[in-house]
Image (cartoon, rainbow, N blue to C red; front, side):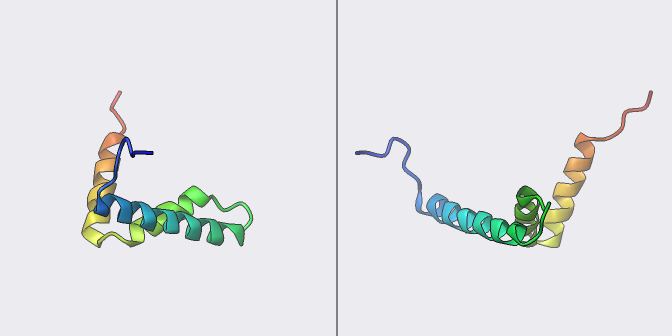
Length: 70
């Protein structure tokens, strides 16, 4: 069987790290009833970013949802 869409080494490494991140998010959420695993995953991803990267992303997100004047 041949890979139709082969991954580069860096893509494969990212995918492995991301799967471990999801596993950790599930472990954390499992111990807390009602905790959203997707939210836990998001927090884990943000902890890997620098403060300036987090700020930049927050500002871009805020621009997308800016309230329009009437």
